[in-house]
Amino acid sequence: MSGKADRTPYGHPNDDFVQAGNLYRDVMDNQARENLVGNIVSHLSGAQKRIQLRQTALFFKADHDYGGRVAEGLGLDVKEVERLANMTQAERAKATEK
Image 1 (spheres, rainbow, N blue to C red):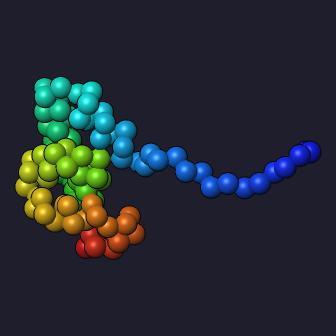
Image 2: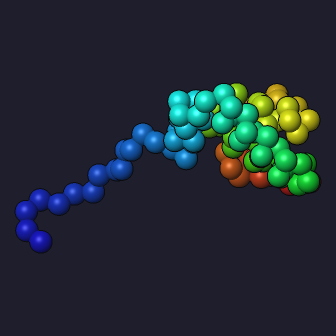
Image 3: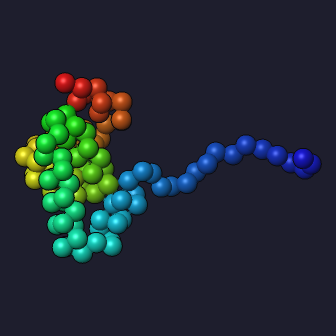
């Protein structure tokens, strides 16, 4: 190698939730959002509550309406889901370990 070389931090603005939120808000119509939420609620309804809370918090991070609708469909407290969504992954796992 010749010339100048340096390390620079990678500063891409996306996170794991931007694209999912944009898809839900900007691409899907109301019927598609309703179908998505219904399918998720149907599939998660048999899961342990701690798993439901963890996953719904991730949906909430993508879009508040998305996570809120899944939470309501599962009978979860939306405020609890929002609280979990604001945690780090490690904090969320610890808060829902039982």
